Amino acid sequence: MRKQAMSGLGYAGLMMILASLSCLMGCGGGDDDSPATTTTVVTNVVNGVIQTNVVVVTNAPAADPVAPAAAVLDVSGEWNGPLIPEAGESGHLELDLDQNGNAVIGQFFMTPDGIHGQVGTVNGVLNGAHLVLTLTVNGVPTQMTLDGQVNAAATAYTGTWDFTGGDSGTFALQK
Image 1 (tube, one colour):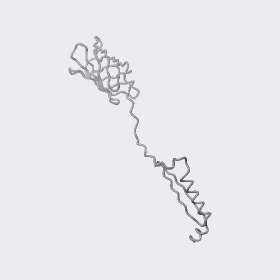
Image 2 (spheres, one colour):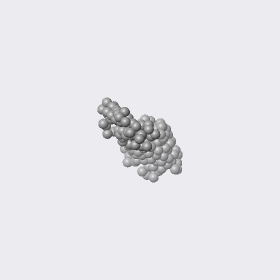
Image 3 (tube, one colour):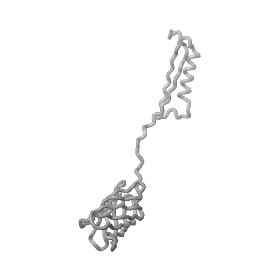
Image 4 (cartoon, rainbow, N blue to C red):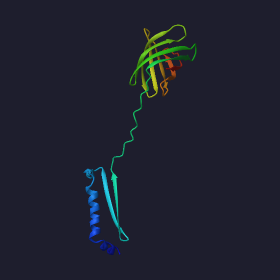
């Protein structure tokens, strides 16, 4: 039967197949030779009818799932809020911060006991939302470390603090 169907095609059927193939392989403005696509032509004779299926596959490389770079939080600006010691009276802290990438510098004003103030410099590092600042009191070999988390909007900074003398506690600063 297959032999009869093929012989029934004759010259016209063979020409139709060749014309289809030449159009598929020769059309497309020169882009069909690109290694980025593969064209497959499958021709079958079923019950005396020629069926031609053309499949064009783009061989594009799989996209690497690269996550966008995480945005660095902007902690620059003025921050203030309470210093709450483990023992004793609460104080108040004001920071004026500048940021360059993950490096943070600035100035501070602190009233640890609500009466007299101390001023000094701020140096720190922001790693994601984790911000560690070292406050150095002007003219005194005293440092205070703030270690905490900045919220996603960069409007709240909370954590723990400790002085190089033993005092420690918590803080909650707002921008």
